[in-house]
Image (tube, rainbow, N blue to C red; front, top):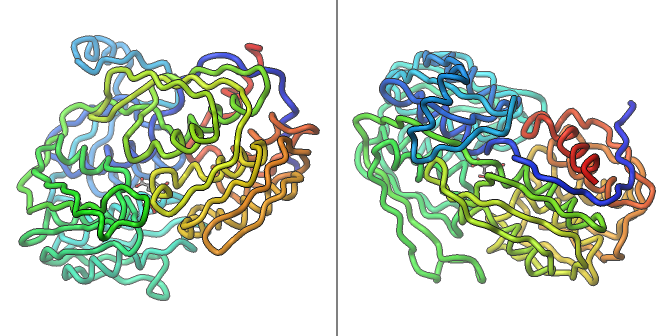
Length: 464
Ligand code: S3P
């Protein structure tokens, strides 16, 4: 199998508008489909994962149209969240006609590679008496656990079954639900979101207690759609040491949702790749505009800050009820750091980049409490450790993370994405910062979240 080469790079320079946020795009499509009337979503991510969500809601009966750009330009000029859309073809402007909270029709849903779609959608469908759905996807998604949603949904009265009681295909037969109080064994925004959606259709109150806070995009979006949610800290006694306090989120049954109009900010998890590239390649300075900085997503910025990285965060106007910023990253020396369980949910998708930064840092970087990495698009403890070791890194896997002995450099070599989008991009960034370059096999996996990744990196090299 031939790969794509990423040669050692001169200084990276320039400005990028990273693609729209994947987590928020999934939620926007689902909540718009659950809603009454039309919702305009500006800057919906056009990637394999989020297009699977568009197809899924169409299958449930929602209408989806692409808004024409000229019309949109006029419309957004009157909006308080007006943001010119510099993200070109990776950002779609959609008009979604919802089927209403109780209106999805029975269907077979192909989730492709999208874990968020697989975990969130059943929450809505479980509370629809008379309906029947199957959710299935690609080979990789079939290895990812869904018992984490099937169990609490069953406790709410749902009729959900899955292969080996753990994996897709997942079958949902709609039924009457009742609210529960559920303590998440592990902080997970996907599981929390699933139960909150189910709670909108359940009798009584549904509360989710998370051991440490995870991204609250669903809570923000439901609030915008008119749902009265209650969120409160439940003290530090339940919290993992060093984490933000444990949190309880409560919803009650809703009559209707109405989202109206929504602007999707840029995806920090995608921006993190060119950002770390700039930190590692000498002489670089890269500016990333319009990036969502949800307080429960920005863990990577805190970690990099402790590593001594020069990342400037300039807050700009919010979008879609989410804070937004311009990030400016400059190359500089890095020192090792330790990341523990409390910080993990805040940086879960960026931990592979922490491993790479650790290779270039002075000292030993340790990530622990991150067993969840084993359940991502690949087993990201194994794939990151094996991948970086193949490039000359001194890195060891542990049961719940990894330990990197920083040497200040990386030799290079061949790197296999294992079909995982974040691994593909990790290999490419490693190549730019390496001594001998990296050949990335399976770079096309990046299309799941960051179409245009290769050309964005090239533009930064070209600008030097
Ligand atoms: C996501 C939550 C996280 C994250 C995933 C997207 C979401 O997963 O890793 O990429 O959109 O809610 P978990 O909820 O499993 O931690």
